[in-house]
Every structure is written in C-alpha cells, then in structure tokens.
Image (cartoon, rainbow, N blue to C red; front, side, top):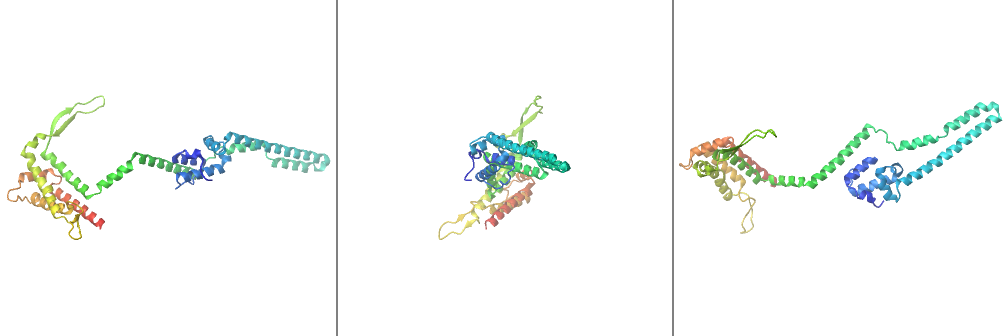
Length: 345
C-alpha cells in the first residue's frame, strides 16, 4: 500500500497507538508516525471482516472503501441467509432418504434410521451459525499475558503523551540550560562566595524588628513577626570594619593575584599576545585566599597593626565553621578547577 488513509493521517501518534491497542495490533514499537499509519492501515484492511462492524472504525472503512460498514454487514447477512437455505435443503434430502429406506426394507429400518440421524447430526444448524456470528463480535476474556501486554502498551502511550507535554512546555530545554550554566568553575566559585556573604551579612547587618502580621482566623494563620536588615548600620564602622577585611582577604587580593599569576595562558606564536582561558586563574585565586585565611583568621597575624583583631573575631563567629569553613571553600574551588583542567586535557 502506497500510503495510509486520510482518517489515520489526521490522527496524532498517541491516538493511533490507542487505536492499535483497541484492535489488537501491537507491532508498532520503534515505528515513526507515517510508518505506523501504513502498518495499521494494512492491518485493518486485511482484517476488515472482523472490525467492519466496529463503530469506532466506521470512518476508516467508509473513507477506504467508499461505503459504510452497514452495507458490508448487509452483504454478510445475505451470505448467511444463502448458507441457511443450503443447510435446509441438505436437511430435507437427508430426511427424504431416510423415509425411502424405511419404506423399501423393514429389516433395514434401524440402520437407515441410524444413517438419517447421523446425517442430521452432521448437518450444521442455522441457529448455530447465528450464534457463531454473534460470538465473533464478542471479545473473549483475555489471558494474563494479554492483560500484561495491554498495560505495557498503555504505559508506553502515556509515556509518549507525557514526553510530548514536557517538550511543549519547554521543561527539557530549561533543565539543559540550567545544567550548562551550573557546570562551570565560575558558578561553583560564585556559589561558595555567596554562601560566605550570606552568613557574614547576619553579623554585620543584623535584622531589625519592623512589625507583626496579625493572625487571620479564617485561614487559621498565626501572628508573624517581620524582620528586615538594619540599613542604618551601613553608616557605622561596625559594618565597614569586618566587611572591608573580608573583601580584602577573600576577594580583592586573591583576584589581583589570580590576574597577574595566571597559569591558564595558551602558547602564542611569534610576538602575539598570549590567550588565557580565564581572566582570573581560579586555582591561583583559591591558593592565595587559603593562605590569607590561615594566616589572618587562624594565626591572628595583623601585618603591623593593619588588621583589626576584633573584626577577625566577628568574621570567625559569623562564617559557617569559622576560618576552617573558608579553607574548605577554597579546597572545593581548587578541586573543581583541577578536575576541569584534567577533563580538558
């Protein structure tokens, strides 16, 4: 067959799979929509006598054959009527033969009668044909294996529909874009610094009570106190002392060292300027930050009074794990940098 009927072409793939399950056609795994249309079209055409009376498939057969299944059913009924007529004729001839044998020889009454009954027994009954026609349209109870296959087909169809919905909603593209953004050394290092700043903010810019949201009995909520950072602390040395010390030891000095001691340079030809993979070497950044953290926050080195030990104590109490937490962050950043370098090699 050169192609599928327009009835199947107008259907979605999930609807075609559901129709295939309805008629017992299961050889559609891995088929594209167009191939599935052709295969199901051939299957329905070959089994038209079985499914022509199915109301769900009436549009298919009407579109394919140019006539409705009702006409086919009428032709089937006429064929059955012809068979019934032939059966009745055979029955009459068998009865007549039995009567003739009885009239000819009384000694052969019993054998003749016996042959007549055998002939009648072998003769199909009209009601049996009608029952056979009715039973062909009634689905038999399926076996456990058939039920299992049907469940698997329905599961595949549902999975296909869910996949289509996910694709249309753009969830897959968003997840891929998010993963690509997070899978960089810069993102990992930024998250580490953001976590440190979040903990430091609670110390240098403490929250201040503003008001209370009263309870709402209708929705059964409890009173809720609202706190916001005390922005007036931005005008005091209590904020700028620890903040400037953390910024100098954890950001400014390590970034300066990472810019000038950049080991990510690629070899250049001639007098052309070198090309760097990173503007700031992430490995150098973490090494210098770890050294300053250990010396200042771990050993209380003031560099001739330039470092305020009170600010050091406040930073140690604010950060998660103290200065050891800062060292863990630099270790994670260095490992991620080395891992990326090994993969690129």
